[in-house]
Figure 1 (tube, helix red, strand yellow):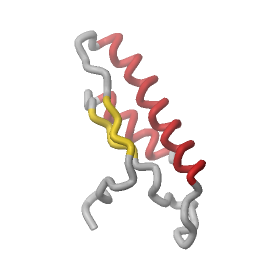
Figure 2 (cartoon, helix red, strand yellow; figure 1 turned 90 degrees about the horizontal axis):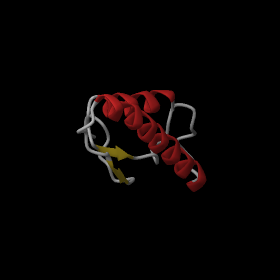
Figure 3 (tube, helix red, strand yellow; figure 1 turned 30 degrees about the horizontal axis):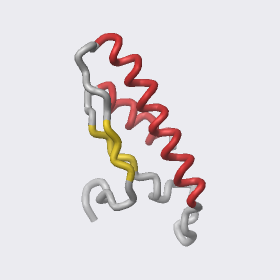
Figure 4 (cartoon, helix red, strand yellow; figure 1 turned 180 degrees about the vertical axis):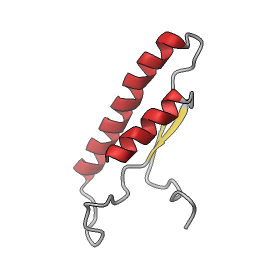
Length: 83
């Protein structure tokens, strides 16, 4: 999850304003044979969106004309690099 937090942080700092959040993907410490709990998926989304909002607030201080990010929250985002 730490890498996901850093990735979202870097995208916001780079000025991206369309942020895709797919928190239904198994991470390294998840059992891939079990379906992820909805509460875990939700908690991850809250964490990542919170990071993006906090970073954006700081970013906006230096970039006054920047646009507030919009979030695409879904579990149908293609896997990075394709599949």
